Length: 537
Image: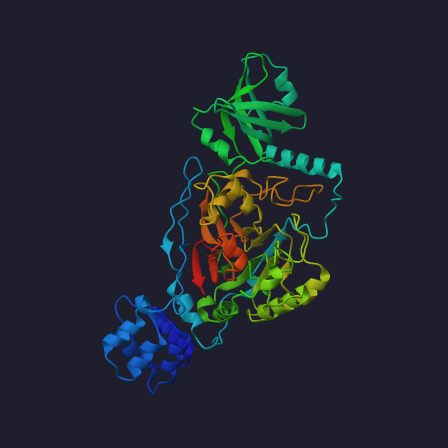
């Protein structure tokens, strides 16, 4: 087997089911007979060995006992610094239908990322190759980009406009399911009447008897709805957030002062949703939260990722979608300056641009800002200003607002940084939304058809003439970041991905018990919407 360079050795090891340390590959390549040496290394490896280590290769080259070499290669014998433990991550899901109530996540295969990633990263450098795709067949369209379109002044009328727009657009998805009546009309109906209303949740509170009182508001006023504690759908109440759109049906009390809820409807994604797919085999890498400028930015992992993008293993990756927080920023959280490697915000973006240059120049790149970036904190966030765009000029990346919808070869990807996930996880019960399963929190945003429904909470929202945060059209892929946790699954056939981060745990994260999933790159096959996770940390 003739071997020409480290990249070929990496591919051969990968085909046999092994990852390899970078120096181990170098030692094999430097041997007098690389092919025979590789065979000896593999033959001497234990059956449960997954990683070919430098010590293992040296033992083989020195003619050491095969058992000693196997012990050197065994993951159980390696130190934590040599073999970082994988967090529990998904390695793919089938497009299984969601459960009837939409609250449970589909079954996911758990385990470490694919073997090829670390092995490719172990190569000394990228091997030259031509990317498989035909650039003339690429297509990339942007929708809902509000950069340069902000009209909000913070006046009372702006708040009225944005909530009217939300009610109208989300209400239109609900009115076909119920015989809707305005709040003022319901008040004048006789007791015992069957009624229905579409509105925004104004308040949710429990009664002394353990029932739930939900106040809905529409353009005419408010009306109270009582959910009895013994009804089968009462568990939906703890999913509600203020200001989300909702439809209710029920029966008026004798005095017409309240309605007893019989059914409850969310705007939701139709269970019959059929996602679009590309008509050729092409892939997109989805990443977020790079955090250049932090002392904990994982530059080695990024370098391995960039190197991997130059290899044949990544030949079908033609798009790179980055969901915010390109840099660490300045003054984002208390005492952040003590954890900065680069203290000037513009220097952080210059450094990020240098790392971006390592990415193959023939990739199409789309970026949105996040809460650490130098844009306004209130959402929707417009794309970066001209000065920062000029600094981040590598590869002429598309820079759009947060959120935006990117349609890549017919596949629509809703990109949202994800600050509201903190609020969803804080408000909902732990079994319905948690940091360990961030995609399940994303399911609730899809169900509500809004990326940040609750106003006045932790998520800063800017009033505009229209609500740019409404999910008008059902996306094929929903991509977020922010929480620094990796997870994905399918909700009513929409692929939801939170892509982790490229920043090791900071002191601040440790203080708030955040254990990040860092150095991962989910890769989406746009022709099937299957996902693999490449690990570079």
